[in-house]
Image (cartoon, rainbow, N blue to C red; front, side, top):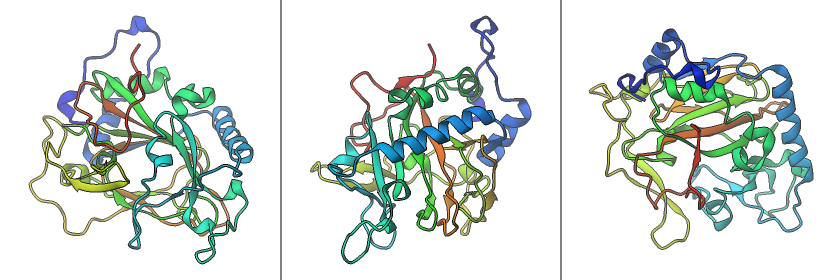
Length: 314
């Protein structure tokens, strides 16, 4: 989000709304991400973690599609079956690739230790996660970032399971949630401590200013599966002052954080996480916000529910 899109302060008669400080905004605009410790208190964080564990224990595998979430590495197609493509207004469970025997396809892990992520409509269908998404604090952050009509989409729990939690290669969130012009911001909340050992995020600091969104993750035109296509529209946010030249080799800064930390991630920022080879899980909750009055077309893999994406402003 470009600094020039920062809006006027909200009307304080609407109630207490926490906004980002000028120092936080400057850090976000310079680096492309912002780490906010203690955004959730310990009680709320523990409650969301327990809710996640309850969901993992209670879902049934008897009639499950057993869809594996793949990021498309190692010459494999990115996930794109019907179970995935129709999850935008549902709560569905996606398995880790390494939870299965590569030869027989037999599930090797208990179900609660086999799920890669749960998504993609938690903020609407689960009260615990809804109450931690559409909050006055998050509304205040959206206002600080200059959103006029912020819409919430793609809310999910990413489990990063012990020993098998998959690597996520460098990517930009606006590739997967493209608006014209790009507007996506990720709200990433640690439900457990995220460390170098269990696969914390790493950021290419400042890459949002030099890395255009060159490709989009879309539905194939024949309606079967997904693919990446070149971006034909804007590649940077509106009125954004981009740097003239991208770096050939980005340097990544590791972002180890404590449970309850919120990380804001610019849609153009390159970020990644490594495989979790440790014995500790790295559960997080994340949702994304886009500008509601920008074009979000029918080719995007995630399509809005009948009532549209969730409004943040009342």
